[in-house]
Image (cartoon, rainbow, N blue to C red; front, side, top):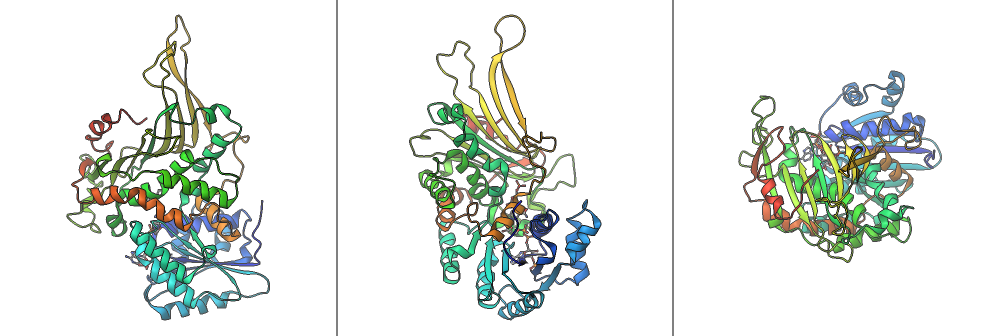
Length: 482
Ligand code: NDP
Ligand code: BG6
């Protein structure tokens, strides 16, 4: 296993008081230490936000996200973690204080890295990035900046953000993160398509594929995140970024090589080929209260949400790609919160050949699932065992989850954040998003967002399968999920 080439690594987490930091960022950094990718003694983690915490109080908060780990290892890690409170993200003086606190920790000869991670709502990106550069970016060290999604709210704001960042940073110093690109279930599509699988490669086009569905269902709502979510809604929160990145893996042409440059080029080309999603090809919904569980309140009952909010907590959209491979093939995407199950998967639905001796209404399917389990499933039609020729769809399943065979899974499986934070430490941009792609992603979704944001969303019950109007909507396209 490779280890970092720096002698000293300081990771500065903006938004250390928040949800992402507690659930993902700190556990990821902890695991990098636990698994020896960054040595404990070469690491400092400086959390920062406006909230005030005493040192122990902050460490208790982080340790809540590290439950189930060996106590001594956690204790050792927490000793490397400190917290600095800022007066405000726009307050220049706070960054000078932050810089001097970081400097006090950094000692010793050798190569030093400062990795800043902005785990904050997008409204704070500009202030933080500008102030970090002005006050906490030492010339004698290597410095890098990770910026979370969503990258702006539309093409215009994404371009403004790019321009702002460009004034302070080179593209080399920036790492636009989308944690879906740290997932094996997302990246596995490349070896499936471009590896030694001629059966898949030969059938990967509109000639054989009827449509592709992407399902992103979460059992939980936007509780407590309304301050961020209400301004963004489901399309901006996950479709424009996470789901789009997954679709890119299914849709892009073969990169010339696996180099960062060639992968970025192929991804951008696919974005360029995507037609803007039309508002009439989008259905939006919002969850109402559960009828059976008083704890599961309507989206509008969240006190951080505007009483008249039309924010979509559910959306189904049809995306078309205008190129030789995909012209006319609908990519049917649905993403929703507060549903009956948590499930994220992409299904490639093959056509049923007209000249088949054993005709079926639909063809076989290939499913790549991230949740609730990590599986690849190829469903093929075959003969039902017994008399005659009854045809059944039989799933061939490869399980990459907890019980996966050691042939399919290494012992150490880093989380998506762990993978990407480590790659940023190593200076590898391959699975981060370049500027042009970040902006182009909005071009595909701008019309759909603008054309639906004033639309009254269909209300569905918390814990249900989503708006009942969806079935009628999908009929137009001759597609279905699952
Ligand atoms: P939070 O709402 O938890 O916010 C993080 C911190 O930001 C808060 O603790 C608060 O710190 C500060 N903050 C909150 N609202 C504002 C505001 N309006 N202006 C300035 N600062 C504010 O967000 P998350 O941690 O959930 O998300 C942070 C970023 O990470 C977002 O861009 C999100 O899209 C992204 N993300 C989140 C994921 C998740 O699972 N939560 C997953 C993937 C990405 P304080 O008041 O102490 O300054
Ligand atoms: C985040 C979104 O970016 O991704 C959340 O802001 C969403 O709303 C999360 O729940 C989903 O990530 P994952 O890895 O659990 O599918």
